[in-house]
Image (cartoon, rainbow, N blue to C red; front, side):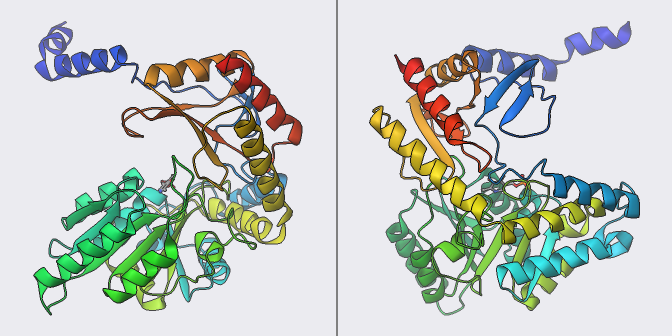
Length: 401
Ligand SMILES: *Cc1c(COP(=O)(O)O)cnc(C)c1O
């Protein structure tokens, strides 16, 4: 009784309640849908069967039979949990084999496996820079890159989306201020921007990084597996390789369909991260069975280029159809195809109207995207058929009318 009374009176909770009520008023409250089937284009959510354009499972691997089998064989061999961090006794042969295969895939000396992309970003930025360094970032970078810069304590300079000219000015300013005692610099960018689907201007960013002796971290969460003939992502798409000053960060929970992330680069860089990256050192290693599942999905990513071909066809089909219907599309050659509605209410209403037609497309609202650019974020997959995309286009036309 005293317990419940003191909770009622606690002012901290009253403040949270008020803030939640305000968010609800502005249509900014998020709800978590309950998924009852495997991830895929046919999904069962909140008791309904829907055609989904809402996951990052771009190649249709999250529930692919060979990936699932590798996972379950990994479980039989290693059990469920890793039981320790990598530097204690949690680094299994499955993790190690996956790291070697990822390095070969990326074309780098070494690769390092992380539990999540979020932690991989915190790791690299925190290990490379301290408060004496400067981070340069695109304003539309993923939240984990923004948080990584903040946490590092480094000075942060942000430039408008894609404005490498502004970045060049900021780099020059920083060099002038620091004099010849060149402080550490790090440019952060998404390879494919996660809410717009457009590409970073990687060749220009890399030139600037070289010119100003700055690191360049490319978070290719949405490019790896998807872009490039061999699926090596943004670097391959632009005819580049991830060599210093460039660093590649890939995630494994999207096109790879499993879970985790990796950083690929020079052996010395990777060894430094092993020794110094706190979010790497002080966390439990991924379950080794997850690494086994990812080894199977990496083989599919490499061997089954037809998945990328199908995906490209679906992207082209969607863009041609949507343009014909008069929808304003962003400059995205990737499976991320946003349709901007403006207000949160309008985007939510469109998402809800699509759901009534059996189609799942999430509304993305602030703070994930800037105010006034609430949108439907359509994501396409190699598992979608031509008929699925037609169904989406028909529903979009009806929703707008
Ligand atoms: C999803 C995402 C991440 C986070 O990766 P997780 O493995 O899900 O933590 C990081 N960066 C970008 C650009 C992403 O889209």
